[in-house]
Length: 283
Length: 162
Image 1 (cartoon, rainbow over the protein chains, first blue to last red):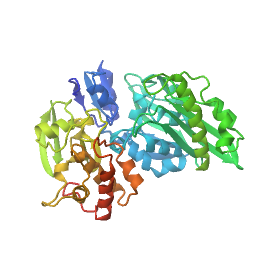
Image 2 (tube, each protein chain N blue to C red):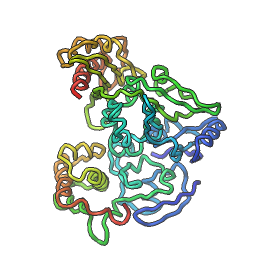
Image 3 (cartoon, helix red, strand yellow):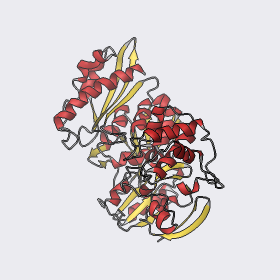
Image 4 (cartoon, each protein chain N blue to C red):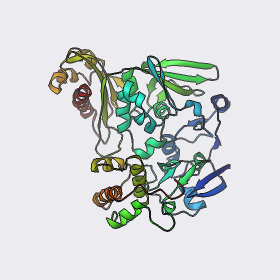
């Protein structure tokens, strides 16, 4: 399958990219292209112009910024997976990147690209939500910052506007927190049927604080706040977290499809939450 | 049309291509390098795997224009001076194939895997090949081939192109 024809620009600065975006009525931004190209090939979208931001080196890499890590939008999943700063301060992202797609896709696919694509089954949404990340979005009028709770708007829709580009994501450091991404699939490198992102801080042998994100339990990634509250003070074993994990499906209305019914997904969310939290507490 | 210049298997090439042209089609149809095959055409199967600037990618999921300025290595550029690459040799030795269709991609991904992790466990080999599908073998001899290559010197360089 071949995409429909489009014009192509490969600017080397963010300013040029934003200007081109503002000028066009029908442009799509491509970063690594690992989500966009399948869409273009299946002709689910046929933009007039494709703006390739892959050559804007300023958008690449991870840096330490005091109490937060700043992850450039063009950082690849492979770079994220192997970054020592990420492993130290945002282990949940390392764990999720390990489960994301396959090695070839991780070499080209980007952190920012996957988040802006906002597939509800994407593996990075729940982790950034659980970590309380902030999104830096650039437009022709300057930059603005959006919190994780406001970033995901709907299916394949984020707070990034038509003429804007996500430039970096600020992730508050959670140094020393345990983390685990529990993903349920039938075959390797599949999109998750359901996945649970859990990161926990232990204190004196019990859970002091927990943050839980759910993948593919609705049109956007969700926080399991009921579970988070119930986990405070819990013993970090599978038995100890079981009662709290029972609250994982509260307030959710997950989709039904060939991979499972809505009820089945709600069942999975509870089981996977129990496993994810117990595993996170062991690390 | 867009102008691109890149290096493919050690050879510098320049062309005008439609921006929508996929790298795999560029390699096969413009350069005649049909050793890289189109399998599923949905970025699932990995049969079209090549190296882009030394890392494995699925060439059906990359635009030719994205490879502008890059170095591309295909299965055809792996052997150096008439000598099979150690991974190619290992697939022959262990019969890591049946119909052979997935083999170019399997070998290119295995080379990438061993570049990053020269002495993988069996589990690491299976995880490293998760983006490559084989419909014949059940993966048994493929995994065996990669472990054989690791043991018998996969550290051979990837020709002059890597």
